[in-house]
Image 1 (cartoon, one colour):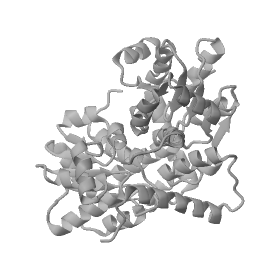
Image 2 (cartoon, helix red, strand yellow):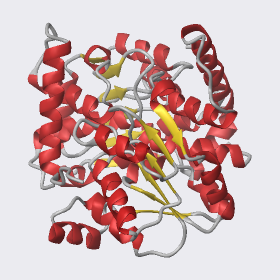
Image 3 (cartoon, helix red, strand yellow):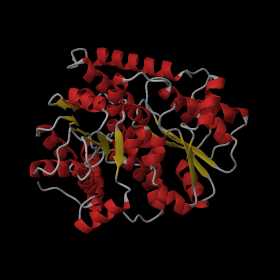
Image 4 (cartoon, chains in turn red, orange):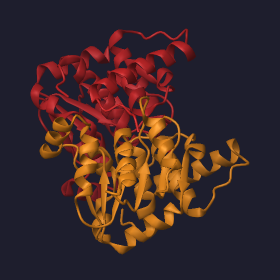
Length: 216
Length: 216
C-alpha cells in the first residue's frame, strides 16, 4: 500500500485541505482574525466537523487574554477531564512554565463531591479556587463545572483569567455554554451541543503552537 | 442558577434525549442489534454528532469477538494516543484483567520511527506485534497505524483479534478506514473523515459498560 508517512507533511496537507474545503463549501465565511482562524482550524482538524466554523465563539478579547496568561508563565490550567489534559501539549506548557491539573480522579475531591451532593467536576472547581495564582479553566465535558464557576464568580470567590467552555452534551451543556457566553468572563465557547475533551485540548494546543516552535 | 448535579441522572437523561432525537429526526433508522445500538449511542453521547448513526460500521461479528476478548481477560488493548487510553475506563479493564498500552510517547519507539522513516504510530504497531497474547488495536488518530496493521497482517507478522479503526482526518483517514472495512479483520470503523480519540474511547467504554456494573 502507498500512503503518507511523514507526520509534519500530513499535518500541513491536512490544514491545506481544510482551507480548500472552507473556500469551496463556505465561500462567504470570514474569520474574525488570523489567531481565531488557527484555533478554529485546529478544532476542525481534531473533529473533521465544519460546524465549528459557526459554533466556536470568542468573547472579551479572550485570545489576547489567554496569550498573556501563557506568556506570563505563572498560572495554572485546570481541565475537567484527564482526557483533555492528556491531549494538551504538556511539553510546551512546561517550556512556558505553566502549571496544569485535573482533579476529577482526586480522592479528596471525590469525597467532597459526595459529602456536598455535587458532581466531582464542581468539587474540582471549588478545590482549584483554593489554590494561588492565575487560573484558566478548560472544560470539554462538564456543564456543572461551568455553572459552578459562574456561581463562584458571582459570589466573588473565584476570579478566573479565562474559560474555555466547550462541554459536549445533551443535559445542561447548551445552557451552561450560553450562560458563559453571556457572562463577563473572557471565554471561548462552543455554542450548541457539540464540543468535547478533544476540542478543548485542540484549542489550547492551537494557542500554544502560535507561541512556540514545534519540534515534532 | 438551577441545574442538574446528579451524574447518573444526567447520563440517563442524556441517553433518553439521544433516543428521542433519533426517533424524531431519523424515524426510519434501525439499529442492527441492541449491542451496536449501545455503542453508537455512546459515541453520539461523546460527540453530539448524529452522523455516527450512518458512519459507524461493524464487520465480521466484531462485537462478539471483542466481548470474547474482554471476557477472556488475557489480552492487551493498544491505543494510538494517550488521549484515547486516558478516556477508556481502566478501572473496568483492570477488573477484567485486560492489559492496555500506548507507545506514542515511548522513547525507543520514537527512535525506531526516526530510524525507519515511519510515524511513531507505525513503530508502535511494530512494537506491539513483538508482544505475546491477543491484541486489540484502538485507533482514533493515526491512519498510518491502520495501514501498518493491514501490511503486517498481509505479511503474516501480526494477527490482531480486532481493530477499532476510527481515526479522524483529512489525509489518509478515509482511505485507511475503507481498507480496514474491506479487510478480513473484525473491525469497528467510522467511515468518512470523522472519528477521534474520544470516539475510540467511547466505543470501548460502551462495550465495557455492557459487561460490568458501574459504580459511579
